[in-house]
Length: 141
Image (cartoon, rainbow, N blue to C red; front, side, top):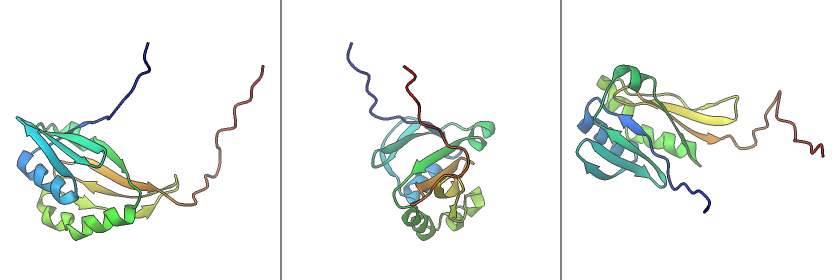
């Protein structure tokens, strides 16, 4: 049997206002690569998602995306430059301050026009975990 392979994992992100969300994600820095009916394919490098013209408040307000990047400060500067929180303020869009988290990530959050929360983060350089960490597995044979 040949080994299993996975090329990409994509999730479906809801949109309350499909046209507005397409503009928002383009402003955020994603590239819209295709669209068919009520689904638009967005990507940045190898990271991708499918924006769907579907909205349920409980779904959107409980959905969290995590985008791991190599330079979180550059992404934060892009969100500030694009003025997302200003341009889309009437739709509830927010961008939180950049913070170093105790779990070893430096991140900020973006809340999209329908309530989806995006954590954009990088691994904090030099982070050393404190407290309980996994012990090496010993071979008992």
